[in-house]
Image (cartoon, rainbow, N blue to C red; front, side):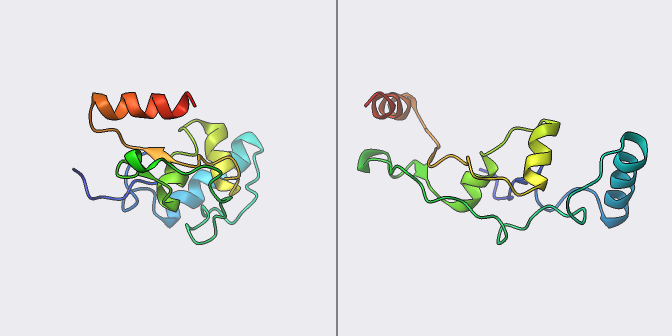
Length: 119
């Protein structure tokens, strides 16, 4: 199991990516080359700045060991990796984040998740 923290704002891990100068250059390319003006200062919102709605559901007790409502888990799973998703992340739009994230470990877990979803 990897203990590194995944980025919620792109591919890879939180400790890797563009430095400040590279980020400024990328923003300049979007602005000057494509007329895309960033709505923020070029920084993605911090985890503390992201507001999530409270989960609307709770995993049943038989799934509680493989399900999470942790903020980071919900944020990481809120988007894909497309450009529109990146723009929504940059704008801090996490209103649709999933309520529960499941990490099944075996076929039985998957069966129980489907049974829960079917209720």
